[in-house]
Structures are given as C-alpha cells and as structure tokens.
Amino acid sequence: MKKQVIIFQLNDEPVEIYVDPAESLLTVLRDRLGLYGTKAGCSKGECGACTVLLDDRAVNSCLVPVGKVQGCKVETIENLSRGGKVHPIQEEFVDKGAVQCGFCTPGMVLSAYALLKENPQPARDQIKMAISGNLCRCSGYKQIEEAILSAAKKLARQGNSIT
Amino acid sequence: MSYLTVSTLEEALTSLSDSSGKARVVAGATDLFLQDLPHSLVDLSALPEITVVEEKDGLISIGAAVTHTAAASSSLILARARALAEGCSAVGSPQIRNIGTIGGNVINAAPAADAAVALISLGAEAVLIDVNRETRQEAVENLYWTYNRSLVDSSKEILLRLLVKPCLGGEGSAFTRFAVRRALALPMVNAAARVKLENGLVKKVRLVAAPVRPAPTRLIQTEELVINQPVDKDTLKRVEVSAAGEVEVRGSQLRCSARYRQHLVGVLIARALKIAADRADPGKAGD
Image (cartoon, rainbow over all chains, first blue to last red; front, side):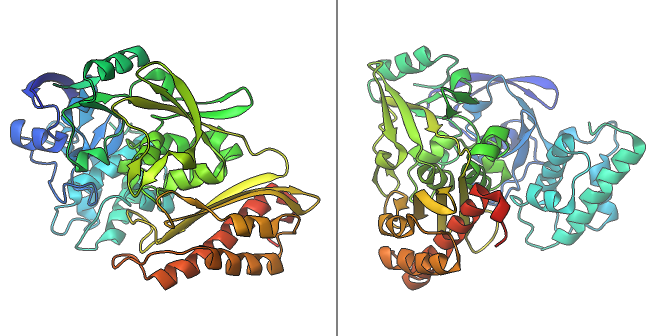
C-alpha cells in the first residue's frame, strides 16, 4: 500500500511515522523504532511472543496492520521498567525462576500485565487463561503462573497500582 | 490507495463505492492479515453503531465489530445467548479475541468458526447494507459460499449486526468443542444447541455441528428425532447415534480421522443438547 502518516501513542509518548499502513505493528516496532523487546516468533498469531498492549488489551502485534493503530495507545515491554527499576511482575519472574531461554518472557509479562490491570487478584485459572496465547517452549509454565500469582500479591501488599 | 479507519457508516460506504471494487472492509484483521492484502482497506472497527451489544425490539443485537472478548463477557449474551459467549471464548487466544470480531468470524467463513457455529445454533440473522444503501437480512447459515469463502462480497457489502432471539423461560443454549489443546487449536469438532422445553419435553430445537460442510451444519434428522421427547439418558443415547449417522465428514491429517470426527459429532451434539436442556430447566440440572 501507499505510505501514510500514522500517529499513535507509544509508551506514553506521541509517535509519528511515515509508513506502509499494511506493514505489521511488530516490524514497525522492531525495525523502524528500534524496540527489540517485542519478539518476532511465528509471525502468524500463534506464539504470543510479539504481544503488546493496544488500548490496554493484549494483542499479537504481528497481526496488527500498523494502519490500525492510528490514534491508539500502544504499550510495549520497554514501558514497564521505570527509572532503571524493573516492574514488580518482572521482579517476580526473576525470583520464581520463570525465565529460561527468555524468548517468550516479554509477551508473557505483558499478558500478565494486561490481566493484572483488569483483575488485580486473579485466581490461578484466570492466570492460565490469560497466558493461554503465549507459548513457552522451555515449558516453564508452572513457574510463570507462580510468578504472576506472587506479583499480584506483592502489588496488593504494596498497595501499588499496576502502572 | 490506502488504509482508512472510518468513523461513520456513510464514510465507509462512500469509500467502497469510490474504489470500485478494489477496497474491502476489515475489522479485527487477524484473519485477513495472514492472506494477501487487497489494494485498499476500510477499517470498520471504530464505527460506534457496530461495536455495541444491546437489546432492541425484543432481540439481542450484536454489532459486527464487537470483539470476541466483549461478546464473551457481555452480561446480556451470558444470560440470554450463552452458547455465543461460550463459542466466542473458544476462539484462538486472548490476544486474538481482544481484536478479532464476531462479524469477521462469520465473513471469514471458516467451516468450524466457533462464534459462527454458536450463532447458527441460536438462529441468528445477519443485517447487511450494500454500496447502493440497500439493506437485507439473512440467516447466518445462508452467508456461506464454499470452504473459507463467504457469499458476502466485502468490497460491496458490510455486515452491520447479528440479531439473536434471546433465550427466555424454558429455553437454553450451549456450545461444546473438542480440540488437541484448550487454546489456540482449531476444533476437531464443535457443536452447539438451542432448545425450548415445555413440561419437560422438547418443543423446539436447533442442533449445529462443524466442520461437516462449508457452513456450520444443522442436523435436521436429529432435531426431528428429539421433538416431543424428554432430554433423558435414553434420548441422549439416540441423539448420539443419530447425529453421528447423519453427517458425512472429512478427515484431516492435522486434526483427526473422519471416523473419529464422526464419533465426536455424536458425542458433542448430545453433550450440547444436555447442557442446553439443563439451562432451559434449571430445576432439573445435573440429572
């Protein structure tokens, strides 16, 4: 398609790019904006490694034509660390050994982040459902579930809002 | 040409007319984006009139651009069209359901699309408008041309909403499926039922299974078999045999053999009917 100007909010900052609107949000994030935290896995919506938040909902960025994000809010894994400090969800992923090869981790963390934004005290089944679109081929799901449960408790204890 | 996110229906129809067949409408784009993209896309996902679920003139009206996530959590759909909430929560993964729409599930015309199977069991009708501003209403099962091809030409026509008669007293619905995994797996078979009971006997029923033919398929002989019968163990056994006997299915190297699929049609249709009947008559649930 012919290039267009696409304006959207990316990690709380306005972004304006001149791009083919049929290009995927995933390639725009990685190859044009240099945000490599979003991983390119299957590129067909099956693995969840490219998960980002679009208007607060987890989506596969590989399936989003960038034309679609015109005027929307996009959040990537880079937005979770603030002032040199990682997010409590990320802390718990480290503490619980929920990171093996690490390729699925940004997507997993963002699915957890989307869940906890909507439901700060999820049951284990709700956690399983929330990460059901994220494949971990090291098969460390148990530790990932533990990390999310424990992040929810930690956030509640600290009385912190998720963001 | 371009990617245009429209904010009014008029704008959408005008863009389609102006591009004389070269543009097509899109909503969630999760299916379309994996295919060859057309020259130009008209994105409907922000059209206010097709992104709401509401009760209107005694019917549940579901906008075509309502996402699967929104439909699955709508209190109206959960209370009055439960099969649809269940079908929508079975689609893809949370990431797909958050952006993929009910209208797309129908127009993409996959033979065993979970939301479409539920809609057809509920007797849903589709409301469409074309570039000449003419509207029509069609039963959802009549929108299929062949495998993965809809009769709706999305360069000329827009699916606006789906209308479902709510399940009221004595009525219930249910959706069931069986797949290799519980997420991100196409079903070997999915099935859905809507039933109306009076004095414990079936007065009206719709039983739908897929993939059987290009469109989710009503099992008419099995429906006739259960009319005026109680939904008890004996009836369910006969339903299982009848449903499996009524379909001719294809096997798939990735999913399952034809024989197993045929067996599953029987099992899942009986299961959907049982759950729908329990919901129609909550006093008897769990028999």
